[in-house]
Image (cartoon, rainbow, N blue to C red):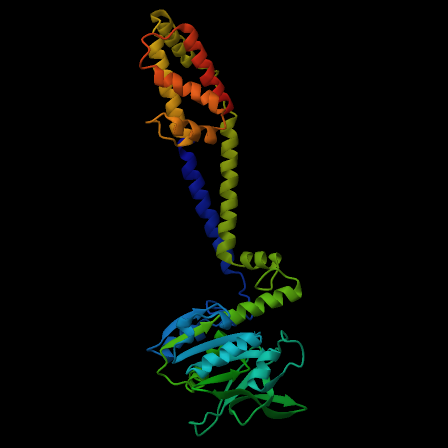
Length: 422
């Protein structure tokens, strides 16, 4: 019966796994409404499509990722031109030093594209604009209604409109300096049954480069871009940037900075803004994970039962092992005692002592001189007089033809005292 147990366990595991998988197929799929803007997220409101489409829009450019503050950038980044810094974040949480570095980066011949729902006060002051939310609430507020945006680019004869039925997460420019800015896009809004357009996309010329401000970051999520032909909105928005750029930098610094700020404000330690219970619920909603977890629990239970059964078997009584080492030591001691070969026994004691010094204190035992005595004294903490007596005895052993019992006993006591206190 015992040899068939693995086959029984394997068959039960396969049956249970298939049963759990069949239950998982019946689980209703839930729409993930989290707004992450992460380049690696394939959820509706992630930015996987936007990030991976950059190489198609700028074929000769090298795509890289930035995770450091602008005022801490290295010279390899600030001393180059024909670069694009692409920022998608709920809030451009930039202070005065960071804005100064960003403007200097653009002035040197680079482009900065910022898509954010709101700008910090320092950013608004530097960019000469004021931003207002279309949600008329907090920064994190999200309207459930749809979003329609319009592009009015200088090289297009007709404005282009794009629509999607998802969450609305945008703002508009309440005020901007028209002497240094160019209006490129707007969003459709409604108040008291009347539709009107609010500017949400402008371009600022600075030095040899440009800064593009876009206030609808939801337009760069997977849901918006994959809805009907909305990918054309992405293509047209970035068509305002020269295609000969040599490097495109996807920024993650301001997204992480916002998430950390948002977590600290809400008292949540999770960067994603969810508690542990929500994470566990999300994992358990995955049919494959749930099936694997239950399968693991069942296998562990079966193994535990099998282990309990095995431990209940009769354990035969075994005789205690003989102490052969003690007999060996006794035999060797009698051999040296009967031969009275104290000199040979002393050499073996010396050899063991020197091996102990080499292994423990990493000292060379080639020259047992005054330097050796002082070094061993400092490393072992033993009195220098005791070490000197041991070394003197070792050096005089070659001239001694016979080692009396009393001298051997005294040397043995000195070594034991050294081993005991070292």
